[in-house]
Image (cartoon, rainbow, N blue to C red; front, side, top):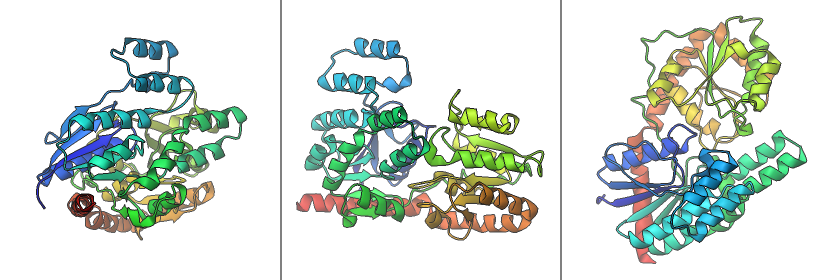
Length: 415
């Protein structure tokens, strides 16, 4: 394939917050190592990128760096050369919305009007109005990991109070934009067949416009680290505390139910605990404060070593468009328990113990089974790593991306 000049748009790319920063780092690195010139055009927080990849900062107001109204007002007042989009961003945030996708899309459109040297533009899930203008001037590939309608649905199910539901309705008001934009995008990539089905259903997108390409994993970083001794009663999970979709409640309740049989049992959570939030209160109610440890801002190597020192990985998610924690754990050869929800079964194959979501008893029984017959499940975990090597290595994934990029460019020029 000829070497291309590729722009990757990312409305926010926090390197340690969720999967977006990870995806942006990995896909930009993979494409650059194939010889392409890759520029990541990102809003704040900015990603950590490989040295071969160029970062172009496209700053907005970045109002979510603080939750203080006085600080947000100061940021807005101090912004020089304010435009209409800045006023929209401030007042939308003030009234409880999340405007970053829309405002980034507008800023990206303005930037690309002036900087038109790119062969293709890849957008990471903003699904914003600005993209409709961008795809008139550039071949455009949209990445949708999963429709955020699912996050909205599970958050509403987690709390029935009227005020909470009103606040969530306001926060997710960007979905109205995404539902309008998504059906008009000509080429979409998603990382699982389950997400393909949900995008088609929730965003009214023609399935023929949605291409499935799995996310890749750095299998040279997520390794077993056999020199590290496993703690036989250390469980590990990855979850954003207070995000209902991740199902952390059920892991915590399961942990509490096992303390009598396994007094030394503990749970390490790769994620940040919100002080005074729902998860913090639940931990206090269950009386397991001394058995739950949160770790955040870890590098990939540090996460892999946490897996290496643990005995069982748990993914208790209610929904995953593509579960990075699933393939990370499997690549580290740790026995895995995961819910049989959304994309997870198509990722794990026969190499994990699958349980129904929201089922504390099934999770507790699965943990007991593995701890009581660990050698059996460790053999399955070893085969699971080979499954990841065969199916989720970045060389294979990048070649699939190059194919869809080539087709997108050809179709654009035919039109």
